[in-house]
Image (cartoon, rainbow, N blue to C red):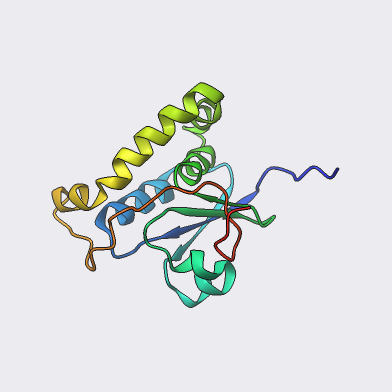
Amino acid sequence: MTTIPPPRRLTVVTDELCELCRRCRGWLADQALLVEIEFLAVGSDEAIRRYGALGARRDVLIVADEHGRIWAGPDAFVMCLWATAAHRNWAHLAARRGWRTVARLVFGSVSSNRHRIAELMAGRCEDGSCDIHGHPQVVSPGGQRP
């Protein structure tokens, strides 16, 4: 069995039409990072080329590493925290058995209300895409769950 090393580079697929998503991207970009972060816009040619149908989904956060692993929803959020110097410990805590449920609930609550949160930020999701319909875990580039 081959062990895949930890990521040294993450790609975060972001929804540039959503105010909350833009602000979260800005927050992450401003952090002291322990791994390199690349941002791709949802629906961009490059996001679709790399991740197929996942690259076009506005309803879920997608994070991928250079080894081909892809995280979605709450697990993607935990990977974003893991990438930061200040919040890696929180990511390790959120990945623990009992805390995973808490992380999923918090992320799910924010995600399912992102349209309202964006409105409060004096911005809106320009196309109504801020409605979240589910939170899959790790998925393949073709959009299928393993």
